[in-house]
Length: 77
Image 1: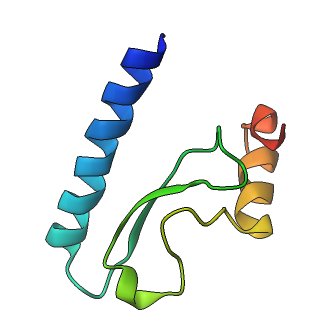
Image 2: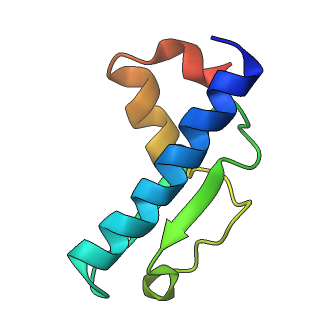
């Protein structure tokens, strides 16, 4: 994949995040992480009012541990 493909996929997933937030309703938060940016993984949030997460925040240590322990070991780099 090239940078343009990555951008298209991220744009699609961002729209999907917003759509899922609308479908699931205000009591469900949907967060999209781009793990290629470990210090700023959150790239989209639907129904943000449910937590303190905001765009540009990073995944918490527990979330990263779950990714690395369950089949995504290269995400820790």
